[in-house]
Length: 512
Image (cartoon, rainbow, N blue to C red; front, side, top):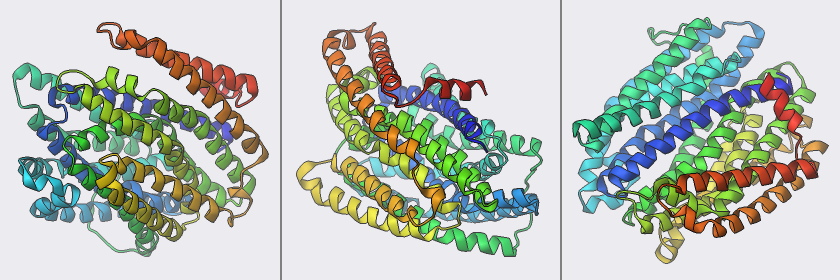
């Protein structure tokens, strides 16, 4: 995949992810308005996070990080790719069906593991009830993730990137319907979760079938390829487990502060927008591309792909991070402050937004650096690095919580992300020329930072001047849109002027 082709794939995934994140904002704005940061909201958020946590562990984490490079190499060599994919599909489905049944019985313990602070009040029983309904989502979304890996490895990114849009469309539609019919919002949301999983899986299954990979569940069998997949996936599974423990630490800390789980969730939605559009898009496109280039012995092409991915990631992420730090209160107040979500909630969530903003470039660079290891089927070192980040997160989040409060969950997450990036970067230095930053990257990075800082100063002053409009009903949305436009124009104007990037590169990729 040439650099322009890499950019084209990135933009395809990024545009669909942007649509999903915007719809996700609409979803969370409605949840905040209907439920605020109350017990039903927190119980639903924990219940929905359970299948998503294990999904990242089974499918998008360990399994796909091992599966995609192996599948990509089989495609490159023309050697039994479809049979291998079908065996993996069957194996994953078998494991998840058994796991889902076990989880139904173990749900009270899973809720305790996620939020032991719920034990003392009504949130616990509600979260257990919601969790049992939502958990089958893991089966459908994990199989959808594997099918998405198949599509991405063949260079077909659109259907897999569009699947998350369905989830948010169904959530928004369900809340509108529930409001019109007088149904309980929490119950309606949680029943929508497994329905959305089925819809997402169906979309990518049809797309994979049209691409020549009609995968079905057959009698499970352990082939030599699956044994190798399991061996490679095991360290990645452990690394994924460490990442999920990091998330658990944050939720456990937050569960002891009323409303904190909801505050952190709404803050998470804001920083997940640039993370999803940039980081996930780069990760999805870069891993199969690097795997093919390594198999072909193309170190020059691999280095170019790695550097352009890092360059475009930071060119879009660093200004987003600066914006989250500079204007968190206007962002949260305009987007979420209504109904049951009040000014106190805005202040608490805005603080979390700023802290997550500090870690945003690290979250994205992990997506750029990890494929260097996974493309070489090296899953052990990322596991060891994840362990170090876990220790840092635990010490900060748990140790400082009695002094600083709920915000230590966000501080620990951001510090752990930066430690992970440092370790990945240091480990990648031994991988040869394909993993080295080139001259163009080294020259542009300081300019990207400079343009972002100038933009941040302009945003801060503009937000101060526009404060009355940002608080005025009826025009605050336009005011926020104007503030964002000021940031975009100032960043890209300064960036073009000082050579942080070239508009022609974006135009060429968009045309393709």
